[in-house]
Image (cartoon, rainbow, N blue to C red; front, side):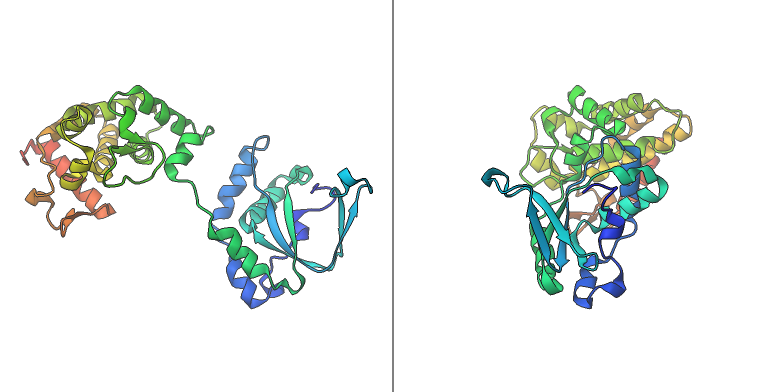
Length: 321
């Protein structure tokens, strides 16, 4: 579909008033997604990638093959009346973002995007098409997105450090966003990325790579539980079952403390004070605040509480063992 001949902003119906109520409800836009997709288009004008839009055609479609030869009979043009309703089944957010990008950058009107059209008189199949298209759709995990995102320099840096630091290696699950009970992994790539991002958030003058590398090296040197897993003295599954140190809540909290340290002009070496904190679930320090009914809570309030305990250790040198 060439922009100079047929434009997405004019081709498809997306007005509530123009759609039957039974179809309207499945096409409610999440407007918060549109600016993000628009930025993706504008920032990657020579390299953005979109899958095809899918739509139902409420009217006649006339197909004209390019010629009558057998090998070419499936190639040709279609004719659709200008008054025909064409309703998007899949791709409404992409279409809305394209409209927004066109408003800022009119020359994008010459770009192409594939469109799959289903004949659907009366739009009777539209709901089923929508359901079928989304029934088995699975979004890639955040870890996979980080691993494959070549445009994000921070993601590339994290992947590089994960390959470089011996403490990570085979102990990082690069595909999943959460770790199963029996997995031998101790970290997820998305967890490492998130905590590292929080560590350097708002610190424009910080050498991000150096700070992130030091952060994880200090943590490894100061958390004997991690050393036990890496040295195969304890299974990662056992650590997850009995210790806070087997969960991302710990490095999430430590990243917030590390960020505060850097903002105050202090060194990350101060985190070595956590060596004396007991991360066992049975430590009364965590009861009711982080461990509830023998389950570790990963809520923001739990993260903040762990961070406050770490600050106590840093400032007072208290032994929480």
